[in-house]
Image (tube, rainbow, N blue to C red; front, side):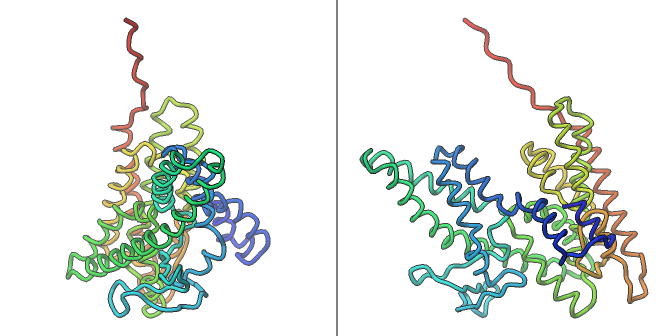
Amino acid sequence: QGLLSLCTFLGLFTQDSGTYQVLYSVGNGFFYFFPIILGYTSAKKFGCNEFIGIAIGASLCYPNMVNSNPSMVGATAQTLGYVFQGTPFEMAYSMTFLGIPIIMPASGYTSSVVPIILAVWVASKIEKPLRKNIPAMIRFFTVPLVTLVISVPLTYLVIGPIASILTSLVTLMFNTLYGIPQVGGLIAGTVLGALWQVLVIFGLHWALVPITLANLATQGYDLILAPQFCCTFGQIAVVLAISIKTKDQSLKDMCLPAFITGLFGTTEPAIYGVTLPRRKPFVISCIAGAIGGAFIGATGTTMFSMGYSGVIGFASFIDTIGSTGLRSVLTAAIGCVIAMVIGFAATMATYKDNVPEPAPAAA
């Protein structure tokens, strides 16, 4: 994905070309269908039938359901009605299940992490008693059938509204923070820089995209999303430090491609493959993002277009119509350097490979 973004930026091909579409499917396909992969691994973890986990993940990525989301940016689904209309928690829906509105999160479920894990956990609680109580003669097909018929609708009916409410809360929170006189940018930049990668994991980052698009359309610039730009650089600095300190060759081999793709704006390999499974490095990357984001927010760094992340993304900070010129490019770069230095130094000082505990001595 990172190399694809670079090729597009350099004008080697356009996003409408067949070349781009084929290569984009290579770079994005795995993460788009991530719920299916996580459905399998979560089922193993929770002691559930792995095929049930895969089926739940596939249902969340099913095209008809993906396209029925009226809340997604650029959606074409026809809205049937609203829940909590006229409030900050207004939610649109385009279909119902047994008369109950199906609320979809703004980002949908593709590429998401938490919804499928929760869904499979619920499915495991349904499947285990069924497996014990249904006769063996019909257990093979009855248990998966009943489990899926219960768990998949529950996922759509419960997780979707919760995600939508959380998305509204995120929007409300950052609007409030940015509205604080004088220090709003500093506070909001700190919070956004700290939480951005967490919001991405939960799919809640989409709450801020409509606000940014509206600001760009009406004002020609946006301040809200600017602080998150440094988070990518804090993340790859942590990965670079791990690659230097670790003695695990397989981890070293994982860090290099994660660093390169992150440099061009694609951080999923770094997050899911390196930092998040080891927890502390992920926390360090969030702290680095918070401090870099604080600087970007405090200096009023401004985005003038929705661009890429990573090194290519600096182009979105160029003021082509106003008088500020490259000022925001410079302050964004300083914020990224701050995040990288903190992320790298903290990881170098604290990272240790997980050493297996010695086996107890034989009696």
